[in-house]
Length: 229
Image 1 (cartoon, rainbow, N blue to C red):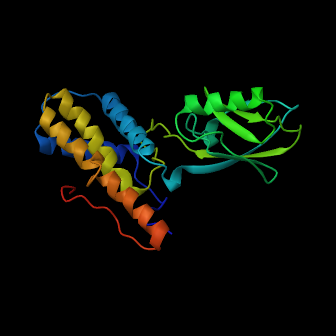
Image 2 (cartoon, helix red, strand yellow):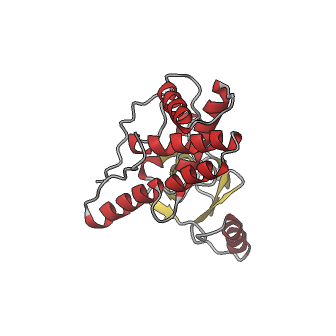
């Protein structure tokens, strides 16, 4: 079990207040509308979610094969996946492995090549927001998709992020970096980004390490920034 929890109760309004507090303490001068700050927070959330395959993003969705159809749209709405993030598919217990790990172009090329060569091994590929299955499943078969949720845009003051509480600091600091750049405080902006994204000691690197260590050893701690008040 990891230290990352899903009991995040912070709201968009509270994230905005935290951002305002940091902007004030940084002495950045400028006029930024609430809409701009919301956009920075949402962009920061996207960056955080895209940094790593966080366990809290993993999602399984069930659907049904239709008339031996080869390709299907990604799930939408509350069960929306991040584009091209499906990493495993099973059809009534039988696995459809991904054709090739790595770049999506390679994945798609390998998928089409296997089809053209008459290879009937079960495979799937992500391509342009769809997932493709070969061979085509029989109509009515239950398909299980394993993928990653995308960041859910925060709009109303009471909206809460999909990220656990451990990630609040990273989101606000990345949003702060946007404000600092607007204020032409480029070195300060870079410092805030480095504190979150540095590949050696950044907040997200520490959280990622915690998860990987706990998966390997069954123990771990929590990342904590020395500058977060």
